[in-house]
Amino acid sequence: MVRTLTLAIPAWPVVAVAPDREPVVVIDRGRVVAASAEARAHGVNVGDRRRMAVRACPTADVLERDPLAEVRAFEPLIAAITDAVVPRIEVDRPGELRFDMRGPTRRLGGEGGVVAAVAEAIAAHPSS
Image (cartoon, rainbow, N blue to C red; front, side):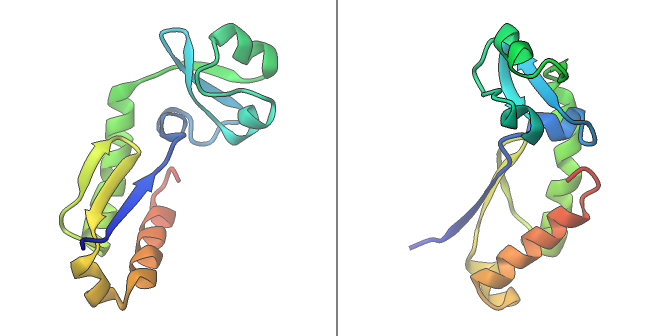
């Protein structure tokens, strides 16, 4: 059996375009694709129409999705994880990746060591 670690950052579009701003809503084709923690606390949900999101959180910055910015912002995080943890990562989309745990668990002292190394790499990432 192959053990896989999956890292998913559902609000990655927010991290990519406005990491230091709150509240933020990112939309694509008139629908919310991601919202910051503060916007979600006000009742903004993924899938909401722009109008509903603005009604729920009128102080939110509403930004258009920028797929290129999402990719550019994710690349340094991938590099940090490949340098510190594992050389091969499968990227499903910006904000979501996975890798085989076999090699890293032996080198880093088990699954807990792998998770700690990934968390450390993420914490060192400037926009996380």
